[in-house]
Image 1: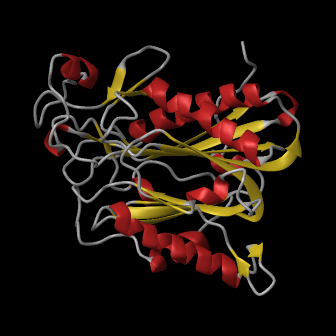
Image 2 (image 1 turned 90 degrees about the vertical axis):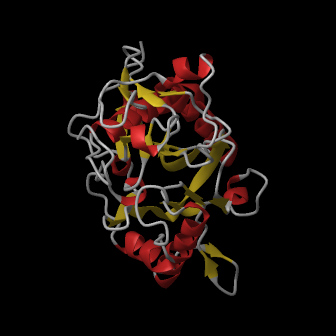
Length: 325
């Protein structure tokens, strides 16, 4: 068995030195954004599994791309409109003198991904460049705030029957510690079409309810196999994960780490990676530790799965959608 320790008193993604996290939350509109900063630069990778994605600057994470490092990642609500918030993170980093040096200027590399939360709050209010800049300015290395905050403010799960029978979700963060002081940490925003299950028991923790106002869970997988598909739900779902490690990896290896970390999403959400989900996993490498990439991948999948559980267990009722927190 892999020797790892559960999160206990650890901080989540910010356990990895060089990572800072900031949230901006609009509870009235029920939306927000989350800035993950690695200002000095980190090797980055990405794995895209969903078919309803909204992204920006993803190509910079390809091993063949000129830029060797990312300087931040922006996660936001607001559907495609929320991508505007990434420009605020770039502006913040530029003002602080961080970015890829082109000779004429430093250009911060900030890949971004969004989720759809327009169906729960005020559809006309979305994260803006100002909100992205504020999220970056609020970033700290303190314990990651979880639940209904930042990009997870309007996140929900179990939407096979629509929002009236869904449950609330949000942000979760978790760290796995390996031998030799190697850390693999995660931050996940869970806005899935499917249900969240505990991989240890197989039991549904949060998901589609059988009736509006009820608490009995319907089991979305079973409903789909009985012929009740997610028709009419649209592409309003996405699970966004970021994993970071203090092991030294190159861009090829960080892309592999993102792929392996995505297995944690598949172990926890049923159904997952559907045509109606925009599921994406990012990976970041900062530090000088040495570790086998496959071992890191096992740890990353576990960190992601546990963060997904925390995202639903800590989510409060909001916008008329019931939560467990």
